[in-house]
Amino acid sequence: MAYGDRKSPRIAFSSAIDATVISIDGTCQHACLVFDISDSGAKIGLPVENSRFELQEFFLLLSTRGVVHRRCRLVRRYGNEIGVAFIRSQPKR
Image (cartoon, rainbow, N blue to C red; front, top):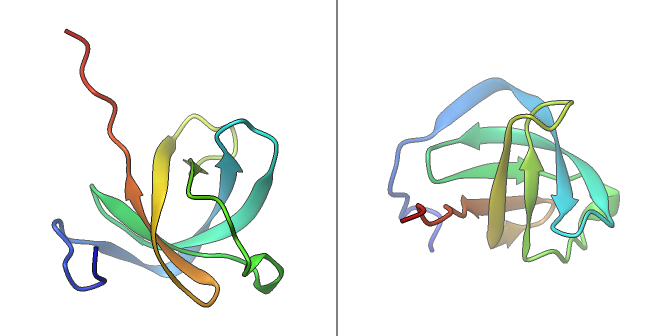
């Protein structure tokens, strides 16, 4: 997915919001900043020391208690900024 090919409009924050990226199995986590977000994805900034971020699929925790979270996959990387797409679970039938 190219950076300009967004399918839904983004909401940019005047000040980035604090969040946490956590691996699917819970073995590693990184503090991050969310610069903008939409229904389908977000742009996230990682601290410089985490610029070698290797996770391809992970959870983005948007609240300190983990109540608000999204499962994500990495779609692009530019320095210490990454673009993610939210993974939607299939509805139960």
